[in-house]
Amino acid sequence: MALSKKTINWLNEFNISLKGKNVLVTGSNSGVGLKTIETSLYLGAHVIMSCRNYEKALNAKTNLLQDYPDAKIDIMQIDLSDFSSIDEFANNIIDNKIDIDIFVNNAGTFHKRCVTKDGFENVIGTNYFGVYRLSEKIIPYLKTLPHKVYYFNTISVVHKLVKIDYKDFYCNKHYEHFNVYAKSKLCLAKYSYDLAKKLEDTNVCVYMIHPGISVTPLGANAFGSVISKLANALRGVFNSPEKSSLAMVYSLSKDLPAGSIAGPSFLEVWGYPKSGKIRRCVKEGAEELIAFTESELRR
Ligand SMILES: NC(=O)c1ccc[n+]([C@@H]2O[C@H](COP(=O)([O-])OP(=O)(O)OC[C@H]3O[C@@H](n4cnc5c(N)ncnc54)[C@H](OP(=O)(O)O)[C@@H]3O)[C@@H](O)[C@H]2O)c1
Image (cartoon, rainbow, N blue to C red; front, side):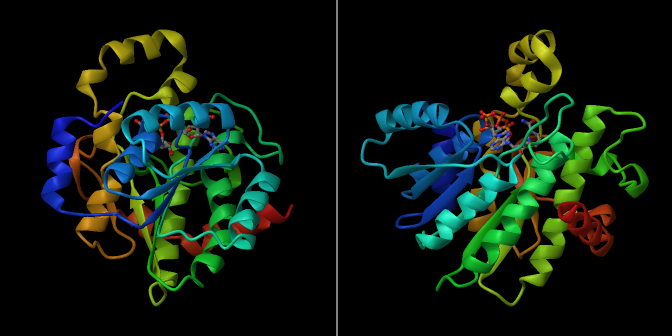
């Protein structure tokens, strides 16, 4: 579980400390989120693992404590495919005045077709509507904190491959779950870029990060056991979840401007992170998307 020597050298080069900082990461029982937690612990942070499955989070916490016995690790439950769970999670933070310096929306799904508890297509419902609802609830609170808050949304390089068609937003005419996943991340990127601009004069600084391509349970859920076994065999070819998790630290240490995107340097899929290009498809059309989102969430 411990971080590799290469990662430790890379982190040491940036000379960054998170001592005394509170870092919350959603979906942090596995993959990139778990490594984001581990990196934060290495840098001295107190972490809040915000996970759907308490048992999985507890297992991950037990493993982490073997390497970081003095770490302060809290667990909170959230299901981003369930608005009542999102509201409860946000209210818990607000009512208990939980202090947060870095908030990482990492949780995401790439599951085959199903619907959320609230009746939305699951991938868009979780990756976009879930993060949108959580952000709208939690950001007014984060704005009241007496220090800077770094707010990260996890997108994907595949956002650039699709367009949004409001007449068939959920791809009902021809459902293809890769397409739906890419759309969920394009929506999240558009929303994040717009949010960063809206919060420019506040203490909340919004960033986008993405992991490139990394072999994690995400792909296994999407593509089934045969492809996932193949991907596992080839995992060395892709970015490790550990390397993929470094985009957060990179954004902080470089003090990137709000609205920036950071992810792997080589073809946006491999390598250590760098600052990425923000495409026109991300910069444009947020107003229409947000109006559509608000009307969907009211129905
Ligand atoms: N791996 C890649 O190549 C890649 C590429 C681009 C973007 N990403 C993005 O990176 C992020 C992390 O993914 P990963 O690759 O590390 O996959 P992962 O290991 O499967 O992690 C995803 C995490 O999200 C959680 N999650 C899924 N649905 C949830 C829900 N409804 N409520 C709360 N938590 C939920 C999962 O919890 P459970 O364990 O309970 O399912 C898990 O902890 C995701 O946003 C993903 O879209 C990944």
